[in-house]
Length: 366
Image (tube, rainbow, N blue to C red):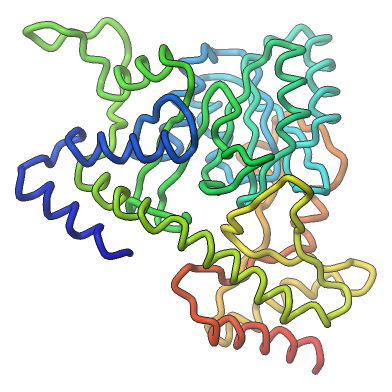
């Protein structure tokens, strides 16, 4: 937390603005839209809610196909199922670990030949690294399929000096407790489409029509963010630049500390890509390490109370999506088998990071 989160929350209590509307909500949404560079933002109670509304309001219906990156957290795809649509997964490219544009176009052509109706593409900026948006936008325009950017991990990341979350028909943010800033739980939908923003505000507040009684002519959802949570977010936005600087410094400390270990690599930023380095990750060269090395290392560090975690298990490997189609090139499978997330919290000191580096070195040296 920064210095002002508590102040804004106390203002909400003192002015009796407790409901899912109020000054903190208005100010937080203004901060988000100005920071990302879009017309407007709607604060919601989760990033999942934001993605669900984006899909629903963009016309995703029963039986439609939504193409989605496989190498991501399940929340990137669950809302597709909420809409009754069919997730079809696409593998990653090796430069950014995000959806492969060439494979995406192949998937589109194949699905269209099968007579499928493709209503959206979910692109994820994984671990804060931007996807290859230029190539993806060309494909989106060529086939007339809108892109939804899952920027849940990428607030503060940019592609060619433009913020992640500002490229697609809609952008999605998350303020879950593990993100680079938090409202304890929350999210936002971003867009330059004023009609989409207006519809989002309406249906996220139970779709109440203007009338003296409660009148509903469409299905609504209870998805708005409270004025209290928005107060936390308002204060967090004030320290976002510091959080990005800290996460990037953590990445550099790990990289410098572990660069002497042959066979360990880091995800580098291609030219024009700027990552907030939400999580620092390492990948092991399978030719220089045994397959069990990563899990053995994870368990070793766990005995020292150092929490690490494998990279995202691809969605096409998840039992809940076992019957979904997948366009593979093997990259996400390899990354899951050979990658590890390192402790990356903004509150970690340099000495703690150094102790993690020391233990990793010790494990491989001994």
